[in-house]
Image (cartoon, rainbow over the protein chains, first blue to last red):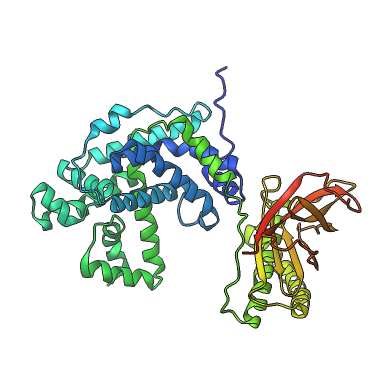
Length: 191
Length: 269
């Protein structure tokens, strides 16, 4: 008889409820589960590991402080976490007055260590599967659409800045972003 | 414009890729509370939030977790919050009563929801029943507190406030007001656990390591209690007092023996 896969009794919604009740262990569990992806987003957007780590602490601190404002009916906990993380990363970029840097995948990949959550294999498996789905969906986009979406989302560049960077007309950039997002939505909806 | 036709625009807007008059017009429409478009916003936000999931997670440095947890432990508020000078007495009394009333309502609702099983009732029905019960009790408490406050010699310069919390009871929240000019203090708490059998809670006013008993109390089924008393004589130049609640043998003691449950600090300057 194959060994049973242990089921995680506490999902993200329950963790957020406990965090709102002041349970720091629940926040620690939420951090253990999703800290790796927040740090990856920070490194991607800020191009600096130390700043990304500061961002990581700030994001989960904000989750802790504002947990009672979280509305489970409006967004899943991971969606909420990613929105907070991206907003804070953009704030840091603006405060640091950074200019768009070329996407340098080597920064992320050279420091990338798969964040294996040994205590949470089911969640790791779920997230890994989701990662594959999203990468496949991104792969369905035209290279140009994918590039401008990444510049817009991860670098926070305006249309004009992207157009200048890629030396393309502004109207073209707007079309790429719009069509790319619509296509992405269709691909993920099919999943 | 038909809202369904805004769906793709909303996706672009949420992605931060819409500018100019189009963005202004859409923002105004969303601010109007359109429920259909609010749903499209939620869909778009969920979609955008998935993009980072394509990244390979990066293991945080080991010290970061501890840094975060240390920040949380150190976050229990102890600083005083002086009342603004330009509030008049009526507003202040009403504000104090409002804070306490809201605290009673929230504390009772939270404590009740934590203690009672939910699976037997529809969530909404349960909350309605609890709110009705809480409102009735809160109304009575507010009346009692208003009588006490009205008799206090309240002045803006003299009123100090602190919240009281502690890791022993993370769900509890205490509120303490000190009326310096009137010479009285007011304490209210909610969300506290029932003390173990044979014990009660005791409030202490601590100044320069001198621990003055300020009264014992038991909490009701919702974990709430109130106390009030006169400010004891303090040495001239006393910078502030610490208020603490401990669990003690029934009847109280003259010097604290139990574990601190919730703590707060009031600075006079």
